[in-house]
Image 1 (tube, rainbow, N blue to C red):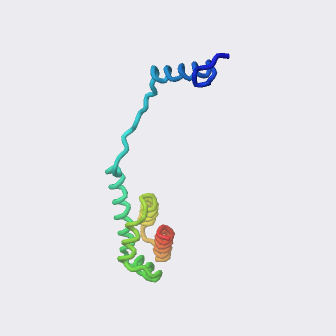
Image 2: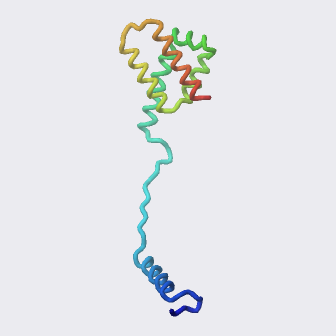
Image 3: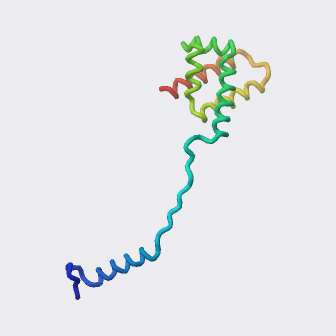
Length: 126
C-alpha cells in the first residue's frame, strides 16, 4: 500500500483529492427567498378590523358591566384586547359576528360572551 508524505494511504488521499475537485467543478446552488420585514398589509388590516369588531362588542353597556364585575375597567379591557394575537382576535370577532347575527340576544348570552372575553384575555396575558 502506498502512502503520501503525510502518512495517509494513497487511496484515501486520491479520494479526498477527487472529492475536492468534484466539489469545485459542481458547485451547490443555494436559493434564498425574500422574508418580509413587517407583516403584510392585508394581515394588519384584518387584525385591525377584528380588533374594531371586538372593541365594539366590549363597548356595549351589558358587556362593560359584566367585565366590571370581573374587575376589568374599560381602559384595561381595551389595553388587553390590543395585546391579543391576530388568531385570538379573529376567533373573538367570529363569535361576536355569530351573536350579532342571532338578532335579539338574551342578556345571559352577553354575560357569557363577556366571561369568554375575560377568560381569553386573562389566559393570554398570564
